[in-house]
Amino acid sequence: MQLTDSASPSWTCGRNCSNICGRPFGWSGRSSSPFMGWQFLSSSPRRWEVDMATKSKSLPLTKRGLNFEMLMWIFTRLSALAMYALILFAIIGALVMGARNQMNLADVLRWGFMPNNTHVLSTDVPDLAPWATPFWRFVASALVLVATAHGVHGLVVIADDYIVSPRGRSIVRFISIVFMLAMIGIGVYVIWTA
Image (cartoon, rainbow, N blue to C red):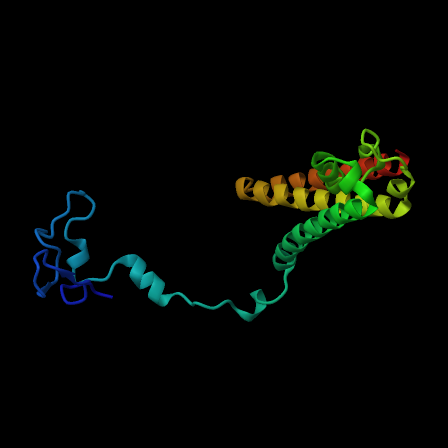
């Protein structure tokens, strides 16, 4: 693509008239930048323009479709939605069980982010039995599982941006998996033994 006076955008010349000229009023065409000069008016296309014109704009068939990277991209989005759904479910459940009259907003939100019956002990709730059912322990376990997997996957993605050696990446992934399993184990243990 060649940029010439006819291909450049048109501006009004700066006066109250309908003349259209190729350059803004008072512009000589020279740039104060030492890197620009008159390159934009040269008749030869720039190297990046040639490269852009010759590169294929579509992926080969072997790289299309569901690969591991696409599945992990989908996992990240779905796990974030699952966390939102579980938190909203816990908040609505708390309000149905009487939290709107017996708890303040901070306690309801703390319950929403981790539905554990120990978060209700310091409130005005008279009966803790509905808050300590296995159902809410399963909800809390699911929230710990999804949040930990989502967070550790995010850390691995960020580490992959900075660690370039394949061995370093595999070491970071192994450490991340061990860390994730340990955190899930500790979280589920605390939820079910509290």
